[in-house]
Length: 342
Image 1: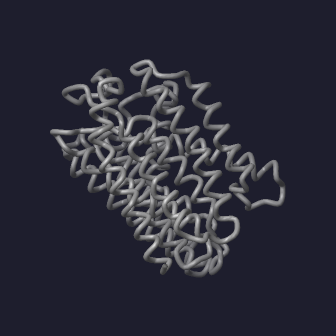
Image 2: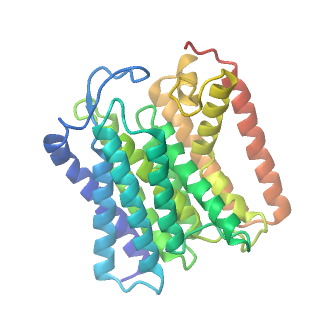
């Protein structure tokens, strides 16, 4: 079959399985996996957090189907096994945390599990390869995977924020990797995009509202972190290797901003607070949907920048990075001036 057709099929299968599984998951698991309003959680009633289960099912169904109907190039299956095995660890860890809500599991245990998943990626040959020194490359890989995994978890503070950024990043990775031989990135990114599309309506529905839960938000972050290490960016520009920072600009920005605000107040950056960029925008009058639209638009523009720096000269790429950094800096300054209670 035509490869582009298979990419589309991968997304459609993942979307259909994710959307189709959600009613059953809500019915049979919803009563045991609930997000109860408390603290920063302002939703009116308890909401099932089975979105992560549906996303995992959609991903696995899509990739298994494509595997059984396609002859993958050498090395692709090994990479996909590593991503799915590491993803299963992240998913199981998040699901355990969801079951133990509102207390959840301890931060050290969470970090150990995420480090194990990062180690799985390294063992399967998926890691940052900017340096000849393995210790440095592997250390950066651990920081990257754990950081991005938790960045998406932090971003899951309002309806649609996490899943929309995951969809935008997946689409960005598809576009950047599509002309290349990085088949496993293409298939997995398409499957992730489909899963996000299948879940998104449930995240916004008033009648059957469903949350991702930690199992879903951390799974999305982990998969995208892994895929960002699986494609090339520097064919046209020596500075193209920094493109993942633009692909993930919005989750990274929100995480950095939240941590800096918490530290500036003498708070533990790992403890919850209302310092998120989205909550600050709502504080000045934006609705949830307007905030979501702004975040999604910013993510799209950041991914357009990411695509651009992989196709232009180093000088031009430097200018793009400068503009992006300037915009993020101005945004951080504006957001920091919004006073939040607590």
